[in-house]
Amino acid sequence: MPSATFRIWRGNGDGGDFRDYTIDVSPGMVVLDAVHRIQAEQANDLAVRWNCKAGKCGSCSAEINGNPRLMCMTRLSSLPLEAPVTIEPMKAFPLIKDLVTDVSWNYRVKPNIKPFKPRPPDAADGTWRIAESDVDRVQEFRKCIECYLCQDVCHVLREHNLHNQFVGPRFLVYAAALEMHPLDIENRAPELRREHGIGFCNITKCCTKVCPEGITITDNAIIPLKERVVDQYFDPLRKLFRIFGK
Image 1 (cartoon, rainbow, N blue to C red):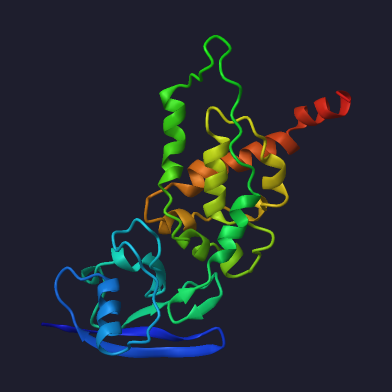
Image 2: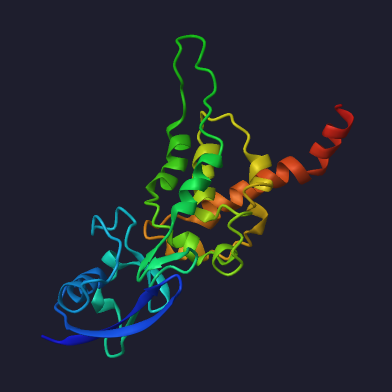
């Protein structure tokens, strides 16, 4: 059975360093399998967050060889095992211990986004009628598993730490799912422009690249939201209507 070395970050918010662990690996193993073997055989106190081990809960997010990924969905066969595999926690959030970060900020952000507000039902029979194509448009956004890899790779949060001014790509996707729903009549443009900081995003598409669910975050969610904000606040004709309509 071949062996491989894993260079894992050990420490907490006060500091730490990388430690090397060499284990036997077998075909079909994923990075999370390796971490569990190290935890069982060599480092019983290694802290790691995980749950479903099927790529659907988003719990085991980490940075593998510098790339934000799900440990349970990263096969060892896809990595160059001749060199140590580096595993470290997400950098956009405070470190708790080893590979576990404090992502609670995300749960404080979500309630600040205006909830779904449906239009009144059709007067004739008290029901809603919508086109299937309109419903299909928002289904992509509902695939999000809240792994927060998009938040981790976003330079506005990761490098500039503007957590108090920018909600991040995950919650722009959430806002898009509401804004583009065919029954929703709420206007979120004022909050997107100010409190949610959509102007900070310069559409590098790094969030789209790391999404394990394949959500086209930038093109299908963020850019259309930017267009709505621009239409409402910077369209010259609308400006005239606001000036002379008073």
